[in-house]
Length: 171
Length: 410
Image 1 (cartoon, rainbow over the protein chains, first blue to last red):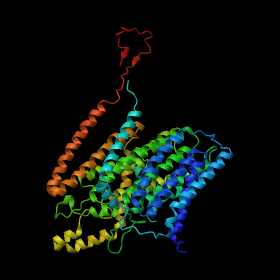
Image 2 (cartoon, one colour):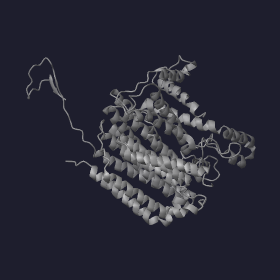
Image 3 (tube, rainbow over the protein chains, first blue to last red):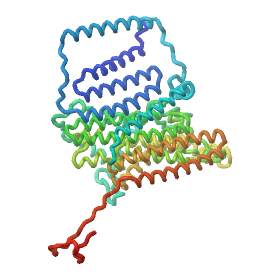
Image 4 (cartoon, rainbow over the protein chains, first blue to last red):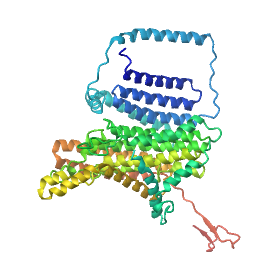
C-alpha cells in the first residue's frame, strides 16, 4: 500500500503520543502529572505542526503555550496541591455505559461523514515558504491587519484588567 | 560534540578566575594549574550516595534533572559556527532553521520546567517556594530577552541567526567606504539591546547576582537541595552548558559571530591593492578558524559572567522583579520602537539623515525614560524613620527631660 510511508508512520507515532498524553490529562489522579501530560501533548502538537511545514505556528505553540501558559498553570496547581489527593472515583453504573455508547456513536457518525471523502485525496505539497515567518508576517500585516490590531487591543485590555484585579488597595 | 568539551573548561575557569578576583588561588593541586579539577569534581559527584528522600513523587523527581539538562543542550543547535561559503558550507550543530531566534526563546522557555519540577518534587515547602520563585524570575526575564532579540531581528530582517550574522558584515552605520563591519554592538540601539540581553541572560541561567533560588533559600533549602550525586551533577552541568550556549547566541547576534575582527578584509583589499596579501591572509585566517572565534567570544561572555559574579551582590526578590518588569521591559519595548523608527527613517530619507533622526529621537526617549523612572522611584516605598535611644548603662534612671550627655537620642 502506498499508505505505509515514513511520513505516515511518523504521524501515527506522534498522534498516538499526543492522544495518550491527552488521555493522561483527563485520567491522571495527580493534578501535577495531569499538567505534565498537557505539556507533553502541546509539545507533540508543535512537532505535528512542524511536519505540516507550519513552523511559525509550531514554534509559537512551544514558546507561548508550553513555555509560558503551562508554567503559570503549574504554579497554581503546585501551590494548591496537597500530598494526599482524594479524587473522584466514578462508579461504573448504567449512565456511564450509556454515555460512552452515545459518544462512540457520535464519533462514528462524524467520522463517516467528515473523514471518508479524504480517503482518495493526494496530500498536496505546500508551496515554498508556506508557514514561514515571511509569509505569516505579510499575511498578518496586510490581509489580516484589522483583526491583528483588534486582538492586540483586546490583549492590552486583558493585561490592564488583570493588573487592576490583582492590585492591592493602598489605604 | 566539541562544543560540550568546552564545558569542563568553563568549570575550571570559573573556579580559578573567581578565586583570582577574590585575591586567592583557586584549585591548583589536581592537575597542572588545577586543570583536572572538573574531572575530580565529576568523580566525587559520581561516588556520592544517591539519596531519594521519602515521600517525593518519584516520577517527577527523576524527570526533573533530565528536563533541566535538555534545553541547555539543545539551545545552541541553531547557531552558525562558520561562514556559509566555501569549504564549510553552513556549519551549525543541527540545522539552520528559518525560525532560529524563536527556537532560542522556545528552548529557554522550556528551561523553566526543570526548576519547577525540581522545586515541586522535593517534599518540602521551602523547596517548592524556591522553585516557584525561580520560575517567576525566569518567565519575567524571558519577555525582555525576547524583546531585545526582536530588535535585532528587525534590524537584520530575518529570524535565521546566520542571516543576522551576515547582516553584521555590512559597513559600519551604513557609511559606504568604511571597512569596519557593522557589528550590532556598535549601533546605539544594538548596544542597548545587548545590555538588556546580557542582564536577561544572566537571569535566565540563574547566575549571581540573580541566583536567589539557588543560594538564598539554600540557607534553608533550595530547589535542588534534595538532589545528590549525579542528579545534582546534571543540574550543575546544565547550568554551565546553558551559560556557554547563551554565550554563543550572544556572540552571534551582537558580536558578529564567527568573524575575527570587525574589519572587512575583502573591501580593504579592493580599496588599496598594496595591502592585498595581508588582507588575503587575514581573510583566510578569519574564515577557516570561524568556530574558534565563535567559541572564543562565547568564553569571553562566560568570563563576563564570572566577573559579574565576583562583583555584584545578590539581588533581593522584589528588586529582581522590579528590574525585570519595570526597568528592562519598558527599555526593551522603547528600543524596539527606536529600531522601527530607524528602519523607516533610513528607508525614506537615506542613510545619513535617517541615522541623525534616529539618534535624536533615541536621546529624547532616553531622557523621557530617565525622568519618568525618577518620578516613579520617588513615589516608592517610604521608609519609616526609626530612632534609637542609646543608654549609658551606668545611668540607671532616665527621665524625659534629661539633657545629660549620657542619654543620647539618635
